[in-house]
Each structure stands twice: as structure tokens, then as C-alpha cells.
Length: 545
Ligand code: ADP
Image 1 (spheres, rainbow, N blue to C red):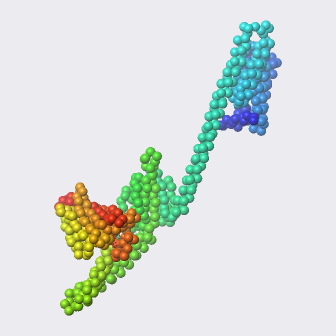
Image 2 (cartoon, rainbow, N blue to C red):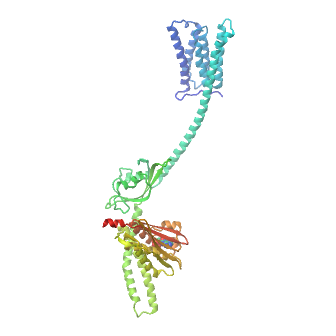
């Protein structure tokens, strides 16, 4: 296989050949000019003249031939002819050390024509040079040997060194080429992946904004962009003007807005915000999730904000609550009068035992129905106007004891105990917290097994009180535990036990209004423990005083 003449990184083969030969021509020209200046008359020597002319002719040839179109080995003809030209210039001119010019073609051949170039260059130059020396010396003796061999040895050394460094450079280039090929393939793969991701993100119906570590948007998907455009939003951030919290009334301060929080590297989930003033006709609600992105070194490398338009969803929930409120309101009055009159009728002395028993069943059922209706009414009222608390210093232990006492008559075979001794003082709304306890204790009885037990305990934990209601009932699965506080949720395990699925939701709202929290741990088949953690908030009371 003929060697491929290499291109330099800037020039094509043609320019590369010409420039290499030009260096030789410039040096020869310089020598001629110097010789003319110092008036050494060698230029008129025919062989010298021929040699110089050959160098210039070769330079012209190098410039005119399109070397890309001819086989690469033909380029080697130029340095070979250069060696002949130097020999002609040196012929009969031992005084000017023009033989050093052999170095140019020797280096050229060793650089670009591989092994055969590295051998041919110094061999040809050495043979011609030795022939010159021998022909010039009338009686060649051993004394002439060193001066004859110095240049050929030098050429051999230079050619070998250049050949070796070329070979090494070529091997490195092969490795580099391979690496750059791998890099390019990896880059292409990642580009394709990024394109695919962009296409997917642009196909979804929720807004996606990716922010860099300085909180600037570096990617905004089509859904978000379209949404911003159609609502005349000047900025990519949602709610450049006013943004309200989930209740639709509380203005969110600038630094607490979801996009500002995400820019600070916070992560959050489904934060509900309203855009547009409370009295505006067209308002929009969004559920916004922010996710912080960590860089390789663990630093924040930006964040992703996903916004979902939930206006229709919330409108549907509101419509359901409105309907529920009006229906339950209408039901409550007739039910109250039914319960009242049946209560009176039960006590009438003239009743037979059978009728009294039947009326007691009616009374129990209407009591239960009144309880359900009250729950529903309570829930829709809380959703519409929020819970109003009246806080004062109170004893949570008293509330727990009273709730347990009140639940006992309806507990049947379930044993209900209250392990509370100390007064558990705190600041809170005793009426609302009793509602929480009633709900937890009645659930613990309702979802218990016959002869099971319910224990209510209160423990102190620093500035908090921890109330637990533990039962030995059917328990809840992990999925049920996650969903149990959602509105209208009733676990499949509740079976035919009556209920609305609102009690725990209302309880959680009440506890949260006290800046506390309610959690549940459960073991299916063994029972559940509901834990209510409430700050005692006694310091607040001191401050108010
Ligand atoms: P309700 O009891 O009226 O259905 P709740 O909001 O009080 O509504 O409870 C929601 C659901 O949680 C119930 O339907 C029941 O499935 C489950 N649950 C509540 N408390 C318990 C408990 N102590 N043991 C097992 N399941 C429970």
C-alpha cells in the first residue's frame, strides 16, 4: 500500500509540498545572494548554476502540480531531485559547505515517506557525497575517512530520529483519533437523548421549567410557553404579579413563591397557588412541584419546576362541597326534629315493650344519621371558610378522659381505657380537640374486633404533647395508611362499617391549625396507632398576658 502523504491541519497536500520545497528554495536563494555580495564567483560555474536552477524548477513544479490527484509516492521525486541538485551545487565547490543542504531533502523524506524515505534519503545523499569527496581527492587515504563520513553519519542519525518521532506521533494520533471518535459517538448519543427528552417534555400537558444554579430558566417546555403567551404573562415565572396561597386569599410573599423557592434549591410537592385577585372573575389554580437537581459534586446544579393547571379540578371539588353543604343543611333540620320527637316518644309510659324497642332502634339510627350529616356539613363549611379556633389554656388529659367516658356506652365488647394521669396543659381549642378525640376513639372502636381494646395515652415530649390512640383492630395496609387522611377516603377494609371518610380529614385540619400533626402506624390484622403531636404553646399565652 503506498503511503498516504499527510495533510497538515491547516493546509492541503498541495500547499504542504510547496511550502516544504519553498524552505529549501529560500535557503538556496540566500546562499546565492551571499555569494554574490561577497563576490565569490561560483554562480557562473555551470554545475552550480544547474543545481540552483533545478531547485527553483522543482519549487515551481511543487506549486503547480495538484498533488492530491497523483499517487503520493510521486511527491518523493522532489526531495530525491533536491539531493541531486545539492550534489550539482557541491560539484567542484568544496569551500562552500553547501553539502549541508542535503539535510532538507533527507528530513523531508524521513518525515513523510516512512521507512523507505528514512533509508533512501540518507543513503542517496551519503553515496553521492562520498563519490564527490573521493573524486575530488587525488590520493584517498585513511586520513580522509573521518571528514568523509561525518556528514553521512549525521544524515543517518537525523533520518532515524525523525522517523522514530514521526512513528510515535502517528501512533499517538491513531489513539487520539480513536478517542475523539468515541467522544463524538458519546456526544451524539447524549445529543439524541437530549432531543428525545425535549420532545417528550414538549408533548406533555403540564408546564416544565428547568432552572440553572442561578435561578435562570434554561429550558421551558411548549406547554408552559403556550400557557404564558395565552395569558399575557411577561415572564416565564408563574404569577409575576399576585400569587395567592391554597385558600385563595392569602397573598404569598415574593420570596415564598414556588419559583423563588426552587431558585434557592428547595424541593417541594404539589404546592397549590392561585393566580388573579380574589374578586377577579377568571382565576387560575396551579399545583406546583419543585425538584432540586444535584450536581456531581453534591452542589445544587439547578432545579426543575412542574406546574399543573388544576383550576377545573378545584372548581369540581368546590361544586361538590357546595352541593354537599346545601343537601346536608336541608337534611339536618328534619333529622333533628325526627330525633327529638322519637326521644320524647321513647319515654311515653303507655308504650308496649316491642314498640319501645322499635323506637329505640329508630332513635339510634337517626342519631347516627345526624352524626354523618353533621360531619358532612362541617367538612364543607371548613372548606369554604376555613376552621375558626378559639384557643385558651386547657388540659388535654381532661379532654381525653371525657371522650373515653362518652364512647364507652357504644363500645360493646371493646374495652376502652384511658392511661392518662398527669394534667397535660396546653393552649388550644378544647372543643375542636374533643372533636378529634371523639373521631379517633370512635374509629378505634368501629374498626376493632369483638373483645378488642382501645387505649388512649398522653406523653410529654419537650415542648409538645403526644397523644396516642391504639387499637387492636383490623389495621391498615401501607397504601391505606398513605390515603387515610384524604377527604372522603374509606379504606376497602372498612367494609360495611358506616362512615363518610371525612372524620380523619377534619381531625387533621384541626390538629394542623394548632401547628401540630397527626400520623398513623398500622399493622394489618393487629391494629393501628394514631399519634397526635401538639405544641403546648404555653409561651404564646405568657406573651399574650
Ligand atoms: P369514616 O370512619 O367516617 O369512614 P374517617 O375519616 O374517620 O372516616 O376514616 C377514614 C377511613 O380510615 C375509614 O373509612 C377506615 O377505613 C379507616 N380507618 C380510620 N380509623 C381506623 C382504625 N382505627 N382502624 C382501621 N381503619 C381505620
